[in-house]
Image (cartoon, rainbow, N blue to C red; front, side):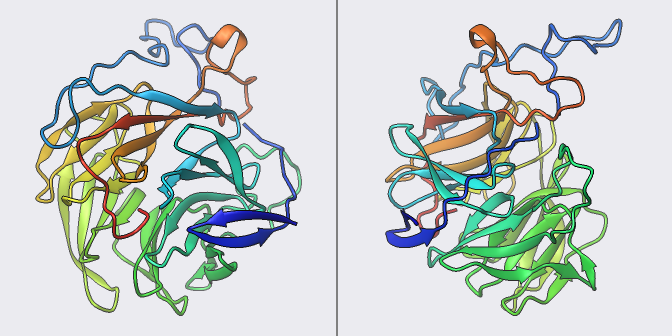
Length: 347
């Protein structure tokens, strides 16, 4: 049995490491497949220059490479001890980076959790994608149901169906103080503490989702727009409206909030920052297209992002996979911030 520390408490987990990693090709500028006359994709990692955003980030701040690997990374969550954890779907584990960028496996056998969230009481939740990886190389059908689950201190399925139908390949989630979970899978949904699932709205193409600090507003990415809902006391939502548009381009992916209510949205060019009224404050450009974001560190003044791809090929070149094999390589970067993450919950 393997013991590890989580939110200041202990859990026991059976250490059965699933190391198989099916990996979508990320062609570099020098790789084949660029149509004649088309502009090749810019080489990664790309050089970036930080422009100051008042109260958010200084102009002399720099991204630091904290970790890179081929076994995926997503769904960052900062822990009270200053470390950051992240989901690694294909090997069915959760990785952890301490303040010195040292990596350890934090949880094993996660049923393919692909994104994480944590409640105010420290309980850890995840979207269990099981065997739905589009890069899965098996002729056997996937019969393991996906679910929104509490994964620590004791695994409990919150929801695994909507109107009698399987949930499908889940994207992201955020946990409320009532014991419910808002989650995305194509659209946006709410599972209350009893597991009853309701749809939030039609005509959404979602990915990232997060609650405001006081849980009165729910933010959801809808491609190049961030949609907001007012949240009622029972968890139901209303007053859908467009909160912000991604002024720097790209489509929204992961979300984070800070102690001043600002919203951070990952996208191809970097992390786009908005104030609590939806006013665009600026872009924190990233060395790689960013997909996940979270504040971490003891005082939550370090911003972490997950970037697509990794320089793990021969001689430090970009890691690529054979044609038809999904590339799950990811890189985690961190940057010192002026802004402080919200301290009232892990994310």
